[in-house]
Amino acid sequence: MASKSDHIEQMIKKLLLEHGGYYEISRNSFAEKLNVVPSQISYVIETRFKTQHGYLVESRRGSGGSIRIRRVTNASKAQQLMQLVEESGTYLGQQEAFIALRSLSEQEIITPKVEQVMRAAMSNKSLNALETDERDLVRAGIFRNMLTSLAALAKEE
View 1: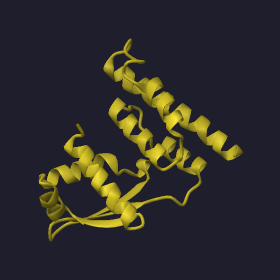
View 2: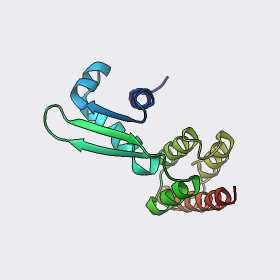
View 3: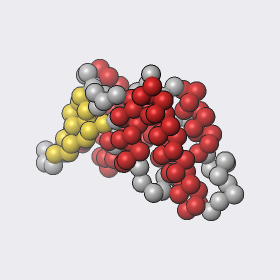
C-alpha cells in the first residue's frame, strides 16, 4: 500500500503532467482536498521535488501558502546528470537515492533497467558491511561516479 507521501507525490505529478509541466498549488486547499495536514504537502514538495529531481519550486507566503512547481527539461541528458553530480552532497541516504533514481527514470534520463542496477548497487543490503554514516558516504560516491559515467555515455550518443 502506498504511503500518504507517495499519494501526494503522484497527485502533484499528475497535475504537472495535465498542465504542461507547471502548476501552482494552494497548500491549504490541496491538503484539505487530500485529507492531510498542510505540513505533509510541504514535506513531500521539499523532499521529492528538488532541483536535482528536475523541478523548480517557488513558495509564496500568505493566503494559504501557494507553491509553484515547474518541471525543468531543457538541458541535455548529460547536462542534467552532471548538474545532479554537482548538487549531490557528501552523504546520500538510500531513500533519497531511490527517489532521485526514480525521477531520472521517469524523465527518461536513465532506463528502468539502469535504475534497477543502480538501486542494487546503492542499496543498504549491498552496503550492509558498513556503518550507517559510512554507507551514506560510500553511496554518495557511487551515485556521483555512476552519474558521471552515464553523462559521458550520453555525450557520445
